[in-house]
Image (cartoon, rainbow, N blue to C red; front, side):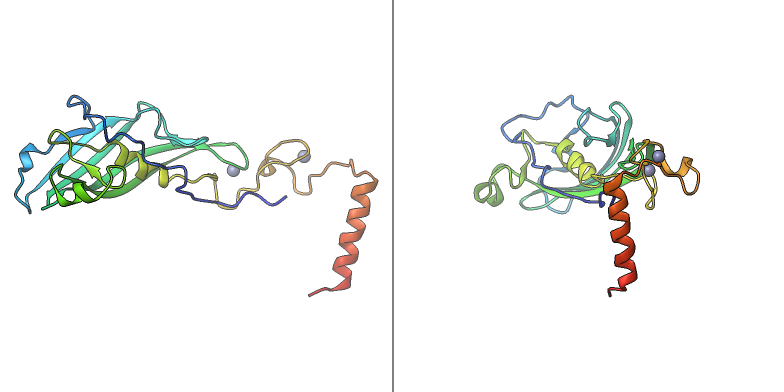
Length: 206
Ligand SMILES: [Zn+2]
Ligand SMILES: [Zn+2]
């Protein structure tokens, strides 16, 4: 049986429609831009450690809720808004898509995005779901960081690139089984298929 190929997709990462929500100043994800002012070219750096929310994960892999996310942020004021960039260190946990063994590894993702000022040209010419906004002089980076983490997660995580998965008959992991492990349950149909495979090999088709 051919194992599922590693695949990445951004199709399920639609940014939540949160533009009509005012940032909660007490949220660890919300940072005031007041210190930055409105003069283009000013830059501030921030470091934060934030416990992972429950939704920083895909079906079988992600950041365990409550585990620390180490954030390094850089806010740069521009004419149109604040350019927020940085990186996040997380610990990813999940299970192998082939053999179901637990797996974990450290992951660092980087991100960068403009948050437009409410009175900017960008604000007037784009929809809030296209370009994020500075709201109440604050920036909420949670969606930005979540998108970066989710996009970096494999849909079919593997414990190792050449994981052989499970025996389809007994469900044991191939690495735990003896070489030549098989089940003597070949019925007539399988036997016929085997015969066909052998004759195909013999036919030397290139
Ligand atoms: Zn595996
Ligand atoms: Zn088996």
